[in-house]
Length: 334
Image (cartoon, rainbow, N blue to C red):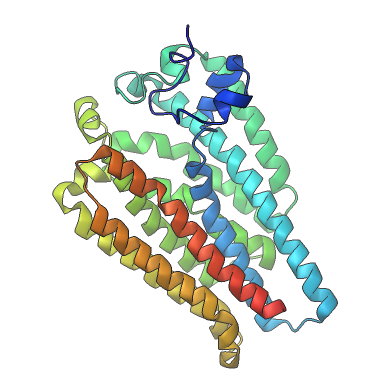
């Protein structure tokens, strides 16, 4: 089998995977989607936003001295690192599980039939072992947090387990993906605060709306094959109404994010005089809204290449919000 035949049809051609990973391990890298980092970025963003928002809320309600501020920055950096590694391994474990559940369907879809399981380059047993190894790394990271967060993280497995089967029984599989991919909005806050509150719940709901929007765009790549094999999706459900529906979803996301930001930064402490510190966070949210409008303007649901490009651009949206929250945190501690 030559190198071309060992690559997945929709994989990134010039990925570091094919330069640095031994070819015998390529099928496992493809199971985990290592050559497509956009997936773990999108999984990570709600957690990173929530960590930063919780840290800002903590600083607003608890006065600190210079020494404490240094520890806050150290703690924040460590949590961000742990969440990044956790997102990488759990996204990989989730993709492996998803491919195990979908291997029969993937064999009937042109874009996915070359994946390691339907193509026979990885056995079911090998995939299960690989999934468990990645999950163990995720568990090790989860055990670094407080007990509430550990149980909250364990509860997220329910959303992961049910998601692959939703495309068979509901037109809303993207909603269930939103439940799973947005969980970091809850977990990020809980590792800082030791519990939950209204801001992370609103951020979670906002992220769900965002996920439904961007994954609907992604699903338009496969709508013809999905129709042939009987797979349901919001792309098929919304059809020609996709653009106005995504406008509504993105509007809900931005509105709920704005309310979550306000409640975390102002409502808990009433520190309206601190508004200068929070300006970057709301500026990031405003620029993020503009980015969403750009997606809607450029969207062509019958152009698979453009759908993929717009889907990936949501990684930029994540950076925009994170940059705003980071700016607010730096202003607060400097």
